[in-house]
Amino acid sequence: MSLLAIQVLNGLQLGLLMFLVAAGLTLVFGVMDFINLAHGVQYMMGAYLAATFIGWTGHFVIGLGMALIGIMIFGLLLERVMFRHLYARSHLDQVLATFGLILFLNQGVKMVWGAAPLGVPVPEWFQGSVLLGDGILYPVYRFVIIGSGLLMALVLWLVVEKTRLGMLVRAGASNATMLSALGVDVRKLFMVIFAFGTMLAGFAGAMAAPILSVEPGMGDQVLILAFVVIVIGGIGSIRGAFAGALLVGLIDTLARSYSVDFMRLFVGPAAARGIANGLSSMFIYLLMALVLFLRPDGLFPARGRT
Amino acid sequence: MSSPLIFSTKRSSFWPVVVLCLGLALVPVVAVLTKQGHWVSLTTQMMILALAALSLDLILGIGGLLSFGHAAFIGLGAYTTGILIQEGKGDLLIALPMSLVVSGLFAFVTGIVALRTRGVVFIMITLAFGQMAYFAAQALYAYGGDDGLTLDGRSTVFGLKLLSNKIVFYYLTFACLAGCLLLLQRLSRARFGRVLLGARDNAVRMETLGYDVFRVRLMAYVLSGMIAGLAGFLLANHTEFVSPAYAAWQRSGDLIFMVIIGGVGSLWGAVGGALTYLLLEEGLSGLTEHWKVIFGPLIILFVLLTHGGIEGVVARLRDMMAGGRHD
Image 1: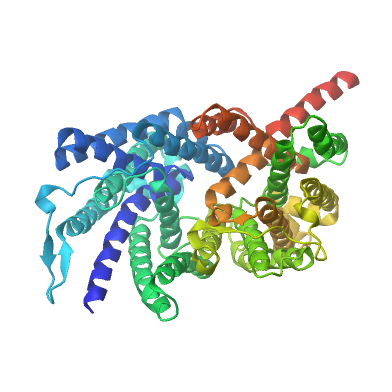
Image 2: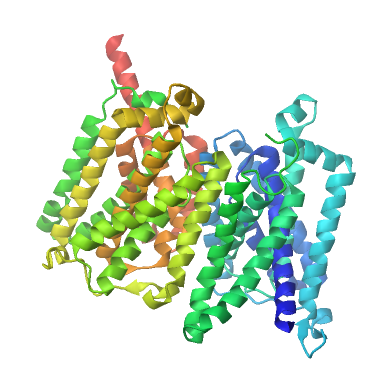
């Protein structure tokens, strides 16, 4: 039971981080029909910038703030220099060009920061653990991640559902051409969405930095999981991204933990961990295939999207 | 992406294919004469990846289906071969058919699910299936798991160690590549290829004409998977090593790029694209260990600046020359 509680918390934490990455991706995808494979490296850049700025300033919150501003500028630059020219292109061109960007940034990061993983200390305020009863300790910082993820989700929901900007975003996800015909500057709208989405991904990377190792290629796995999330949730739908992310986070964490125990019945511990890692990752993709087969538009498709 | 002119019957790709095949056939001779033995091994590697790119071009170029999990089939073929060799059943007569069957079956099952979807979702679902194969390979703890598996040797042929000879293996690979290239060229000009191409441009119209688009696509998908599985069989034998990295999504991305530089839909272009890609990789990695810093922007520039790849450039040149003659 206690193990279950910890695993559910871990799953929640992974799910919320995934949501932050997937939210930007699903909007970029939904509004501009643009496949951005480079969304994962934006997450990675967030982590690297946070590691650097926190190292410089020696202060977590200031470093995080600087990293967020940095990643937003980075996103806007990318949009200006490269992505803008790809909106009207085929998916094939978009996949390929952003694939090239991944190769470049993964290697570039290696050149600038080195191939060895960077460590980011857990901020002083959030060190230590919380007693969950039965003598189970859970690190405070992980609660901070869960809390900030939920807070971001709430802010995002308020913006998308309650503001004029959010209304335009929703309209864009349903039918961007129609929105443009009604006199809205869709390109400008997209720039805002893009910068915001990059910032969310960067924020996820920065928050994850103290508990994961910051290393080149760390965004690739996240990117593919984020794609799974938005396809399960329905492209262009924030609600879907939220549900999909929590589902993926929980299933991944629980499957990993329990398949280790299950495999231990048959093989030794090292082998069990190896096999379980592969098996639990397969679960997620099976889930995605199943959802797509039964509901090709995802669980919560954006309204009015054809 | 759609350039139906490439497939007009008047435009024959006979000569480029002949030049390409002759050139490849002569590589070992030249390499032996000039004592540059490593060229044989390098060119074998290139031809294996060219075979994989060729198989992708069948569904991507002619079928218009952007599969982002194509490396999975290479991985399946390679692992089937690798495991059989490790279990002492690595004879060509067992390993080759088994590799084809396994990759073909995987293509059949995943194709039934994936081909019901369109566009972006198809890209994502093939990516997901590719990742499944990748993690399945990682879970094969008894066969090396994450670290991969070094094989005891190459497949035998009727118990003979024929394939250990570099030159023999080179020509086996060459024969596979040339055979598949010819087969696919025939198929693309036959009704099967026409229907596939027609469905790329307008699936509804093909349905209305009475063709079962889903079935044709599934057949192409399975055939494509099997050819990639063949490439996997060759790759495992060539490197005498199998690893989950063979099925990694980056490899699928590389394959797409190979098809694109060659020009989507022209089969010999896919082969030329794969050769270009690997020569580029070889050249750049000789310059600096951080070659991807140069390679990534090259891909981006290529996409932004060109349409139709090398084949497109050749076709345009030919158009100009033909135009000159008619005027």
